[in-house]
Image (tube, rainbow, N blue to C red; front, side):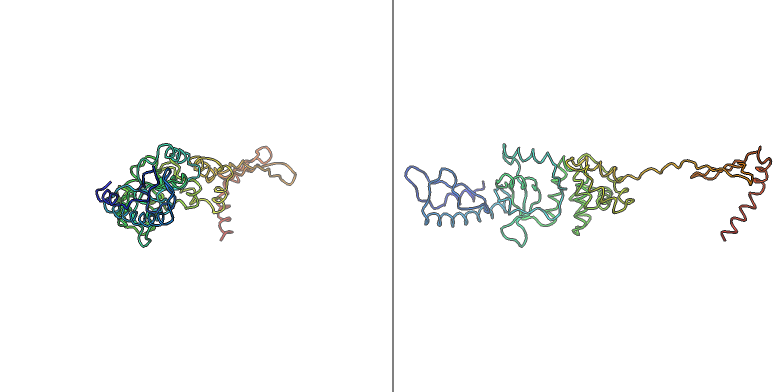
Length: 338
């Protein structure tokens, strides 16, 4: 706690006391619901409550100002903290790791604070640089979000967001590509994106290639696919290009996707969009008869061509005759085709 905050606490006007109960008041979030006394505090009269609430609001405003200046950790109502407009996570309703994350916070509390900035043009609200999952967990648990408040510029916000991403072991390849693509769509300069991603221009280009090739409806159906790397995403991108819109929609509506984790959903859609191998055409054979009904030749048709076999017993020398006249037959054929 900074010295200025300690000084503010020391100057508080004492609350009316009930016999045997000392007056105490804990520091609260500037935007957490007011009007609820901490456990163990005595009930106050209407005048005391009004005076205390007014003082609390003034003290909370001073606390936020101090936190914004020196980056101290404070508690905020998560409902007043909005995610960054540039998404870095791909939502996944089957994310068991997030469920475990919520349980860990329930049992042990929020270990590391989020980083937020005062939201431009929206007094009283904050924008999250990192800590979106911590904010979701706080909402689920009905707890305040522990956060550091700093007056970040747009560029500083993106770089802080990107730096946090680089430190995440669980951020998948497609989420990195998705983050880079979202920054491009938001009009962020390539050099700022490269700095936020901590990467070189060539690697950034490969991330953007994948991000641009995967439609949003496909990505939202698959999710983050944590074990799937760039080569398989490129394979999926090629299959999407070759597939009809109807085939893609059918793959995304497959009942085989239900209840499966993200990696398995990727595999289902990848298989559904696979180009089927060409069917092997069995040779089709037919016989040719002379006017007497005798089979003097056999014609076999396949994908590679036509084969004619003559029967020397029925038509001796016909095969040689046919072979000698093939050039003039070909010429006649071409002439008929114009």
